[in-house]
Length: 88
Image 1 (cartoon, one colour):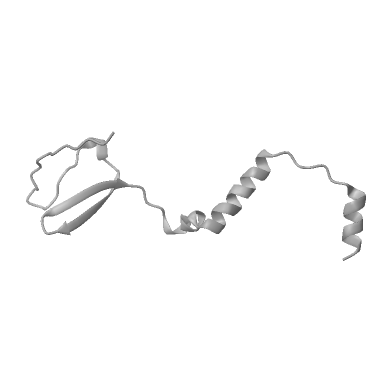
Image 2: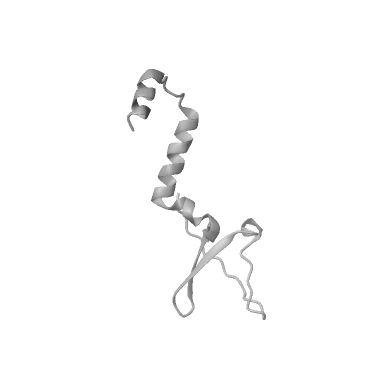
């Protein structure tokens, strides 16, 4: 449900404002489309050192690794495996 609420806030002499305790510690994005117009959105940020985890290739590899943990391994025919390894 998307509800709109207009709230008047006074900007302090230091240029700061409070959004309220429910937003304490949260990261926000502030978009200014024109002077005096701001759109404030809550956001989650990803540290640079963890950004690689969200790339498609890394994400697919992680998904595959997690599936390998969940799914039981298939039984191997050791004779066939030995034959395959000796041919190389």
